[in-house]
Image (cartoon, rainbow, N blue to C red; front, side, top):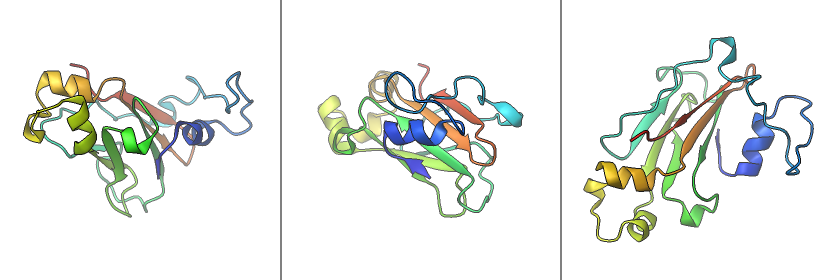
Length: 150
């Protein structure tokens, strides 16, 4: 499942029985579940085009409900987001597709053609403060990456 809002992300990624943190949401698990149980392999993608896929399980068929994803952006307001994140298909929850919302990117980068979004300066603007989180449902292990290290 792709999680749309930060508050839901905090709730879903919290470990069972997590206390409420100072911000009123369930406490994030910190490092206690980070890459535990051998859950590794999520890597910052080399982005040469939009849309692009990101996988945590090499694109394996997993029944469609093995992982949860959250794409943090500058805002949780869908109408203002620069990116969308969707599960690749109903059988592969370990792979998501990330694409641009061209109308919003046009406000950020006026006059820039979508074919130029992958230029380094444009990517840096579009992906500023974007992180991708994935949690394995079977044991709550999670990973995260910055989408752009340029």
